[in-house]
Length: 398
Image (cartoon, rainbow, N blue to C red; front, side):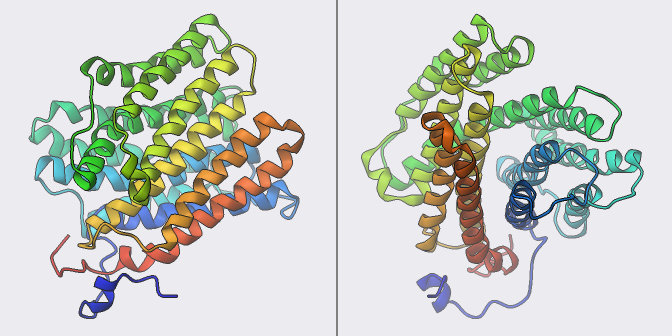
C-alpha cells in the first residue's frame, strides 16, 4: 500500500535532499528514531534480553533521562526552531549551523552509550545542547521584542538544570538529585505543552472546522500557573494536602480549558483529535497527581500519564501536522497515521489505566504499552522519513 497522498503522486519527482533546511526536519527525524531505539533498548533490558547493559548507569534512570532529553528535547528543539521563524519573521538556523546543533544533540545521546568516556566529558556533551538551542532561539525573539515568547529560552535553561541534576547522579557526582531533576523536567515540558497547546490546538481546530473556540481570560492565565503550583508541591511536599488540592485544581482548570475547544466534528479529523486527546492526558495526569499526593495511587501512573499520554500523544500529533504544513503538503496525513495516533493512546492506556484498575497485570501492561509505543513511532517513521528529507512538495524553499 502506498503511503503517498494523491497530491504527492501527481507532483513532479522531487530531487535532492534537504535534511537541514529548517529545524523540524532533522529533529523530528531524530526524535522518531530515538523513540524507537530508546524504547526498544529499554524493553530488551527489562525482559532480560540485554542481561548486562552496555552503559554503566542505572537503567531506569537512563531510560527516564533519554526519553526526556533524547526524544523529548529533540521534538522541542524542532518545534521551537521552526515556530520562532513564523513568530518573528526572522531566520533561525539552517544548513551547517542547524547540522551543528543536531550534532550536539546526537553526541549527547551517544556519550551515554560509549563505555570508558570520562564522566566530565559525558556531562559536558549532554548539557551543551539545550543552552545552545536557547541562545539561537533567544536571538530572533529578542530582536522582534516578542515578550510573550521570552519564556521559552528561559524554560530551556531550566531544563538544562533538570538535566544536570539527573546527569550528576548518573555519573556518580551526587547521590540523590535525579528524582528532583526528573520531576522538574517533566513539569517544565508539561508547562511548555500547556502554553503552546493553548495557542495551537484551538487555532488548528478553528482553522479546520470554522467557528471560534471558547476562551476565558481567567482560565488562560490560570492554566500555566497551575502547572507551576503543582510542580512546586510535588518537588517540596509530594504527599501534602497542598499538593492534593493544587493538582485537583489544575485538573479542573485545564479540563475547563479543553472543554472550550471542543466540537463534535473534530473527532472525524485525526490531526485534531490526537492533539485534543494529548491535552486530555495532561488533565488526567493532574488528577492522578492529586491521588498520588493523597496516597491513593502510585506515582509512576501520574508520571506516565504525562510522559506517554501527553508528551507522546501531543508530540506525535504536532510532528505529523507541522511536517505536512512546512513541506507544502495538504493537512491530511496518510490514513495509516490514524493507526499511529490510536497506538500512542493505547500505549498510555496500557501503561496508566490498566495498572490502576488491575495492578496484578502490571508487567503485561508494561510490555504491551511499550510495544504500542513502538508501533506508533514505527508508522510515523515509515510515513515521514521521506517527507522530512525531501524538498517541499510545492517547490518553495523552507
